[in-house]
Each structure stands twice: as structure tokens, then as C-alpha cells.
Length: 285
Picture 1 (cartoon, one colour):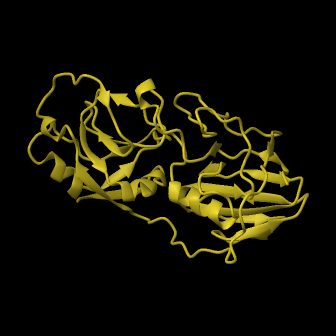
Picture 2: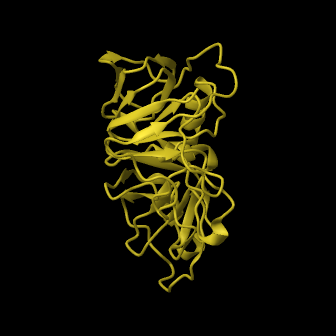
Picture 3: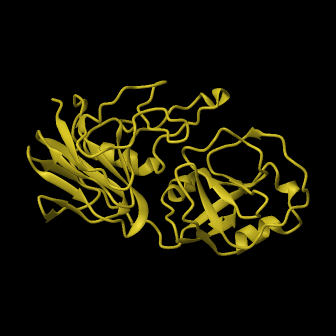
């Protein structure tokens, strides 16, 4: 049966996310969806949902939610204190919530994004086959607001016999593996190696579209203007400042900055957990 969930506090940025809307890049619409897809899938599995069911993605400081009906929930992703009616909850485990109880997520201590899955999924109006909130194009539901009522859907599928998963916290200094990009020839000799051997810091000027990095300037061999071309999730663009940008879930589908490298698919979820001020390193695969 479905249930109502009241948003008491929305947190810094809490959105509805699923696995996005692939296949529309030709229309200028990014895939969007969860920035950390593995965490979204795990949260859904723990409560017996399909892996791509809509859930809540919370950024740094999570929301406070009042459940008006009994529910089964799971919280994954960032390392974050969670309480239910003041009692601490474990992450990466299924928890029964009684009608009237208050769920509160505090401030993440490692990682950036947390995922709250509710059995039955979060109900929202699908658009192009997805309920994902795309902050770049404005497609999908708006970020949560205080006083808003959410609805969960009808459960489908069995609840797993084991409702807990062993998951390591996001790395303090992640190592992201790279493949050479399609425009690495636009950079001076050694630029790709400089990207890989240097330490980088995530700028506060980052969002779901991209993680901007602070570090040594990556020197260009060419200074002319690159015509706008298609870009992929995980592409590392380098603007004229020489400071790279990792394109994330809400990235534009085209760009005019040369792409020096692309983050390996296996490390895209870790890239989605990068937080401002965090250090990271790269390795060339």
C-alpha cells in the first residue's frame, strides 16, 4: 500500500532521483539520475524495490521526514548520522518506520550524497520514462520544500531475507582511474601525466553538473576555439583557466572545452560522492 511522507525540513538539496533518462542526448537532454547509482540501487534492493525505482538523493545535510503511514526504508551512500524518533539508525540496512515517526539525517562526514529508498518507491510524474530531477534542464520534480507531501508507490517484489549490506564508507582521498580523452592532443606534452600525478582539491563551485577541481594548470598546446561537440558522463573538460572539471550526472550534452581524459565507468559513483574541499588523485588506466 502507498503512504504519505511529510517534508519537515528539506535539507540543503534533496531531489527525487532514479537511473535517469538515457537516449535523449541528441535533444540536448542529459541522462541525469542518481549521481551515485550503486548507492541508489543498493537502497532499493534492501527494501525490495526494482533497482531503478525513484528514491531521494540528499546532498551533505539531509532532510527531516515525518511518515504518516508505516514504511520500510533504507539509507545508503555518504557516511551520515541518521535517527528515527531520536534513536540512531544504521546505514545500509532496511528499517521499519511506524506511522508518525520522524526520520532525521544530519550532516555527512564522508562523501556528499545519501539515498533514502522507501518500499514502493517515491511517486512522481514520469517524464521521458524517468522521475529524475534534472537541475540543469529543469526536467522532473523540483527539489524538496518544507511542508511538501510525498507519496510512496505500491510495493512490488519480495523483501530480501537479509536486509543489511556491508559497505565501506566513501574514501577520504579517492583515486579515480582515467582513460585518455578524445582531445588529449590539444594539450602540451606531459599534461595528461601532470593530471595523473598531481593532487587535486574539489572546489566549492561544484554541483550535480560537474565537480570543479583546483590544482596545477594543465597547459594547452592549442589556443584556438574548439567547436562544440558531444561529451560523456565522467569527461574531464579543461577550460582556458587550465583547471579541470569532471562532468557529473546533470552535465550538458555538448561542450566547447577540450576533454583531456574520461573517468573510468567503475569510478563514476565515487566521482558523484566528491565533496567541496576534498582531496583526490587520478591514475591512467
